[in-house]
Length: 80
Image: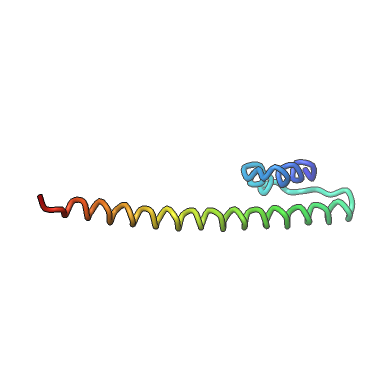
């Protein structure tokens, strides 16, 4: 499972990270548990970065939507 986690983090595979989050890890040593924890922290960091990126994109979409709604309203209010 550690190997799968490493690959998912390196590839930024959010679907695989989600899948792994439902599994209970088993460790053969303290070193392996610490390494697993390090990759979990990295996965959390990646998810937070993606969340921030998506929030910014959504804010930009909202701005564009408001702009287009205003432009369309202005066009419809033109008297001929």
